[in-house]
Image (cartoon, rainbow, N blue to C red):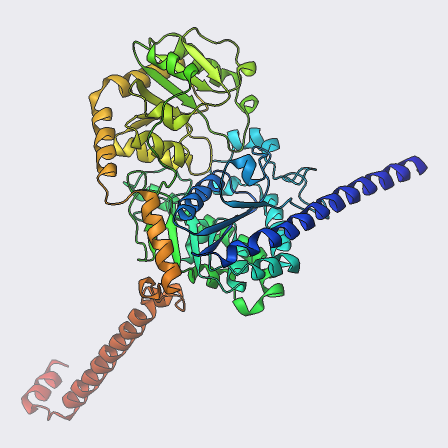
Length: 565
């Protein structure tokens, strides 16, 4: 017992020292934050704050791209983010950016979120790799303990008054809020009195979008993570409606947690739902080439993907490999988010490798060669490649992808058909849209057979309809009046100049669903009409019966009845 007690005390001491160290780092960064930001706050142009949730994934890069564009136009940009295990770059120098990057270590003082936050104060979901691969393709399969990160995030940014004072002293003019799972970041921006631009990197439905003015009827818009296209039969629409209800419950759960801390720190701001509905401008990092149209408010702007750019010259290693591909090149990438190569079943990768060994094209795989059983002669395996530059090369014929939105958009923009193998989150939605648009085909990750992979590769490369369609979309994309980043910059600067864009907002925030659909009006007037019809009928009936009763009886009729009796 004594030994156990000593071990426990040592463990508690280690945990305490770790949190104390992380707290000291955070304090130093806040002090540096105050010092660095005071100077730019007096410079010409807007002073803009970017706020991320505790896990931001690729949004971190996209919003820094916006920041770089705004800096080029004379604005000052500060990005507050949190460290991720899969990207340990924490400073502007590390990230090669002119944006003022403040990376705050995540402090889990009660150690209640150790499944997602490691000892270095980083958000780390790699322990869930096998779960992500096998299960996370539906909203009701999400692990419920993930909401511990919402508690920690809200505590960090709403209860830390030093952070608030540092931000207040920096005199920001506007905030860009990465909205997903970031109600507390939105509350912080409003507490600072800033106009808010929200950023959304998926199809504009589900999650926090449910509290905006955008309406996604289950009859015409497939719900997030359904993997269905928009041509739904009765059964599919029934399933779609079930998914909508599931998302509503999950968002209510997320918002309710955030509301605890918002009410405690800034009760005057109202609820998460009110804050989300009151956002001044929503930027959706998509284009309708890769998403379905929906009923959106005028202050919602599709401006993406904002990270798109033209291809540059390849590094020599890739240039030589691609230039020497007589029959073209296929790119293979499953992204960076959520899982590691060793989480993918061996039989899945063996299916791909067998298929690649039997085709005449060269293949560049972004993968870990150590977990592959063998590497065919026509395959190059690397841990990173310049994706946009490779997609833009004339010899690139096909992109095999997990169907993350950024990669899908890059491929379409650079005229490359896609063979999708969706894994989790919005990837199944993206994949089915590619198939529906005629620019891609889809593989089942749980059933990868070499013959099926070869057949679909052959279809996408040799059937001209796919290349024709992707070329058509790429040409239409380039014919748009503004680039995505120019469009985003225009709207951000417009909001900064005028302070609000209320003329673009729908005035529906005070209406419940019954009022929004005018069901109360329909019910009232229908009931009133039925009542009037009933009263009219009853009155006429009584009058008619009374008239009959007052009529004199015919004597012959009475005598005849008596004779019959």
